Length: 233
Image (tube, rainbow, N blue to C red; front, side, top):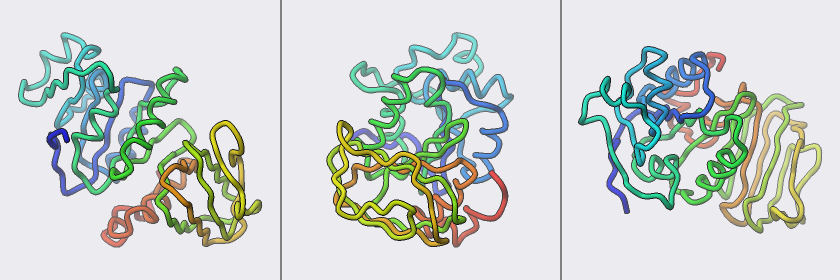
């Protein structure tokens, strides 16, 4: 197991080298104030006038200018080519949860790799934020508080079954798999949505405006402490 480079009592905003807006990072920091970059994500942050507490990765995409602008003790090289920088970060961070942005972007291979990494680290509570959506690996049991009519998509990363309450199209008795049945564009019909899964292989995708509801479901103690309060994301 890799050592935990970042050990934080508060949640972490993790920024990758993909497309990310300053507003998205600012909004993430209101929920997750510890700022970390994955390799070239450091350039993104420095361009926004933000200094990451740590930069983790194989450091092959960070620019020389960014290297020079950062204290040497904030650069953490993990010289592996068989894992992505996102993977390196997830196994190197200990925090209540992680908000990851800049990992979906324009390249489909990067987005797929990020979703794959979520399934490789089921012990890590991480939510990937895209331009319109938030995605996370579902626990075996999940209860979400969402407005009726909210879009809720399910994408299996392996064979998995489940049950549901509060969805327009219930999933009871269905066998999901990446090359078989998937659950795109379901919809909530009740305020409380309950889901159960046979394994930690299902991704849940919600509109990004529901990120605080997702955090409240995944990390109840964060909601109780105000980490998933009423501010809009």
